[in-house]
Image (cartoon, rainbow, N blue to C red; front, side, top):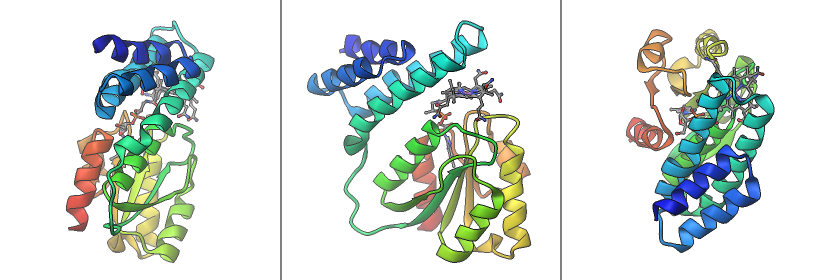
Length: 211
Ligand code: B12
């Protein structure tokens, strides 16, 4: 069993997309849960890649191919990770803030929220504060979910909140923030409505905010 999980992890670390796909398929065929293949395989592999980058063993190209491998694996797990929801619980606008290109965590959060019954409007990466405001004004979502993976782009989360205030629409939406460097205390400091450390806790939090 654990052999299949480590095969997934190793394939992500090696940045090998076809092998990642094969290992995920093999894991599912062996009866492993999508959640374990995700948490202990794909996410764990990616965490290790981050470590290797920090240690100077990996560079940007290696991170990029690892990201591609992880995405390939995620695509296979997607249907399993989503429960069938009948009526949308609410609408979530999600995006990675300005200056930031990381989208794997954001995509995972979007997927889990969709699985939890939310309608998702994904604005992509490098999203300007003005764009979030525009979509809130025009589409009236219940929640705005902001992702940032760089310490240098975290302040742009605060900028979104400031601009929502300036436009007079801050009270119409709940703002959730997350991403590897983001913390609960940072979320409080910038006046966000919530923080979650991972995608499944984000889905639980979002559900409690709209109920
Ligand atoms: C893959 C990767 C890349 C890929 C991204 C590909 C892609 N399409 O996303 C590429 C190669 C492009 C990249 C580029 C860069 N990267 Co990079 N990257 C990573 C790496 C290895 C993994 C990130 C990842 O996908 N993790 C897996 C996902 C599932 O986890 P996650 O994103 O944290 O998301 C989870 C939670 O945080 C949470 N979450 C996420 N979003 C949200 C939102 C909400 C609302 C909530 C509630 C929760 C939530 O839920 C998610 C799922 O559970 C990290 C290392 C790390 N440990 O994070 C470095 C890392 C983030 N990168 C880093 C750096 C420095 C860079 C570059 C500046 C490198 C360079 N010199 O060019 C550039 C910046 C480009 C830019 N402008 O954005 C640093 C950041 C350091 C810092 N403190 O700011 C890190 C930490 C690596 C390191 N250890 O030094 N990177």
